[in-house]
Image 1 (spheres, one colour):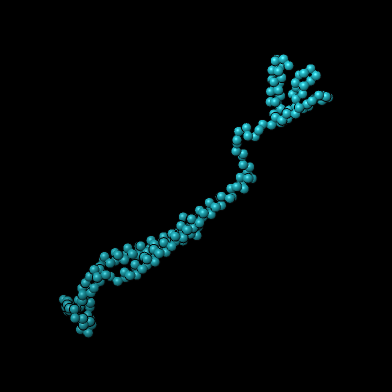
Image 2: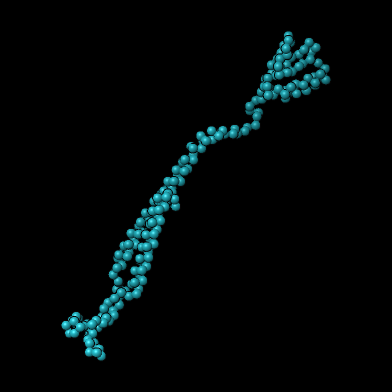
Length: 200
């Protein structure tokens, strides 16, 4: 075959290959005049030899691409991991709420005990004052040895007796302890509500 004919045959073959790529099959035959032909279908009525050529490109030569995950497959894949994450978060939240509730209960118990233990004034929280008491006559006197009798201008007798009473510092300390208990009880109420709702 002349050189020009070979070049033409190669060009025709390339064009046919490009057009027939989707068909995946190509046929080649040589006619009675020695010309080579290509087509995606064998020639009708041709008596000579027809060669079938598979044009499928090797899969290994194709660029690798990640197939898109079908929505159904994606939905099937997600539940395998998402519930574990949600479950772990819920367990962690529940543990935090339980710990918060336990601390609040302990704080209330401690505040109640501190208040109960402080009902009586400490030694440095006492002061002695003189209390005036009307005697109502000699028969109304208490007879305490540390009391003294005073006679007023009107002739009435009163009794002055030293009495131990709590200092202002004691009352301030009790007020602080009562405030601490009230705060602890409010924190406990908040913790109980958070535990019921399941959120911090």
